[in-house]
Image 1: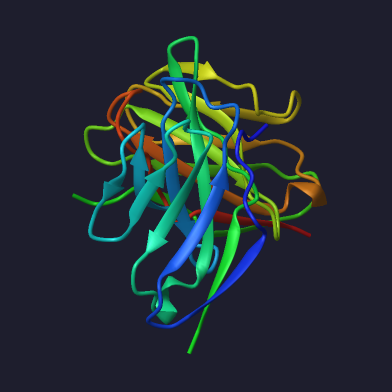
Image 2: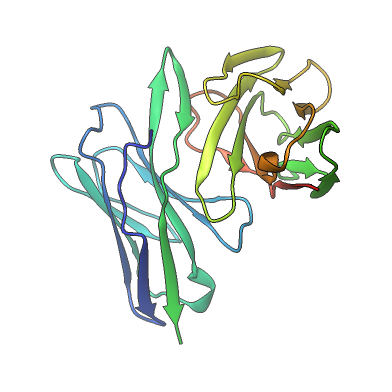
Length: 112
Length: 114
């Protein structure tokens, strides 16, 4: 089962920041938090990942709380093309192997 | 460097037929993951393979489903005697090693069982 919980849907005005929350209260110390998104049922697209520190790349920022039990993905200036389902994932390690367990995600709708 | 290639993109099978889904990982990637996505649902992990080995098949149904990743050629997900409930999108992802920072997904194969 997924280790993450996310709100099922959110709306955001175009040009504003989209803040997508994620709870992962059972995360282990060495497990990373990943964010992927899926546009129109295409293949999931990697956005960003982090362990403890906040991370930023050309797509988004990831804010992880100090206790690592929750995180927030920030799209600084949302566009219509950011409308998608966003998945917060804890990459699980089992017997030396890794796998990504997807939850139900947040359906973000960016409004014009 | 081409991305992860899946074919066919769309596949229609009658109940009872076999479906074979192919996944060619990115160049240099020896780790492949298969996922299934039912309509309006998230992706469900099925199986994780390295070249010639099944590492984790905890998400595979016990019957009719099998996967392989031979030394040469693409990874194959095989569904025997398909039923309507197998209708879904099947995605594969690849990475160059187990602990790589991200997995790269293909565009999926949409299987419709009629």
